[in-house]
Amino acid sequence: MTLTEPTPTTAPAPPARSPRRRRPRNQPHPAVWIGVGAVVLFSLVPVYWLVNTSLKTGGELSRTGLVVHRPSLSNYISVMRDSGFLIALRNSAIVSVSTTALALAFGSFAAYALARLRMRLKFIILAIVLSVTTFPGIAIAAPTFKIWSSLGLYNTLIGLIIPYLTFALPLAIYTLVSFFKDIPAELEESAYVDGATPFQAFIRVILPLAAPGIATVAIITFIFAWNEFLLATTLTYSTDARTVPVAIAFFTGSSEFEQPLGTITAASVIISIPIVVLVLVFQRRIISGLTSGAVKG
Image (cartoon, rainbow, N blue to C red; front, side, top):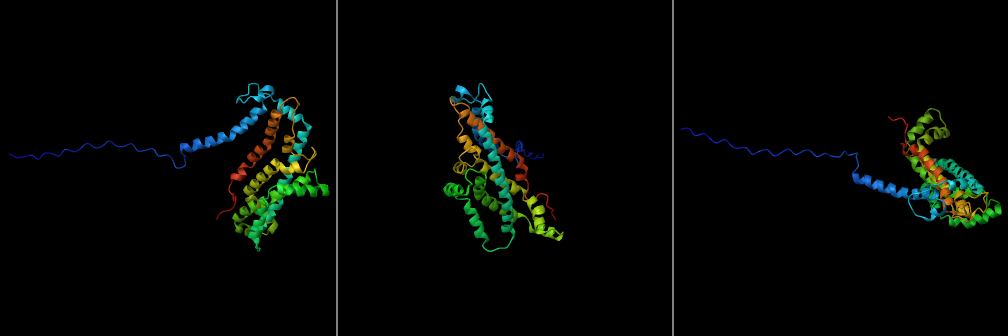
């Protein structure tokens, strides 16, 4: 009789695990989106409150509701009919645009010289330029008031542009120096080989490549000059040279029997529009590459 060997019994194979779905590396975690949404919401609440209050009139101004039951544009109409506010709006535009243009014109040349030319004590010069921006505005308000009164520059637009440049120009120089240093010097040498002068190389080669830095400096300078309050209050006394922030501080509204809160918030919304438009216009320049359009090879 032959004995048959028992066949070994095989254990059942474990069930195959379904592969985990991995999130793509470029896709952020949902918690990041929650944090971003919270930050955006926190930033937009004051803007919503400002617009909400500007649409209220009468007794509704004393309420703190988030919804306007009877929205009205009467505050905006009364603000735009105020000749003093319109003059202040014009003064702010002139002072801000002039300060920005002068800061970019002089700051770009000075920053290019500090970034490219070989000179001694370059670090000390940059340190002195940067230290000017740390001075508080109140430190020069009283001396400037005394000097401007004797020179006839008190209560004039030029009397505001010059002290604004005191703070805007050093910041423009220090910011543009870092942008000019990152531009390869070979691009200028190629322009020299093609017969360009140093000035032509600076205008046609360096400035286009430094457009993101120039746009950033322009926005910072414009916002500073547009929102500045201390010097504008100290160096002006009438609507002839008064800027928008000072005009709003002295704003009493359309009627002495009404709360000026509605008209003040309406004026604040109006003066915020140029800042928003400026950021949207220069948005592509800021986020674009520093050397976009340069020849690689």
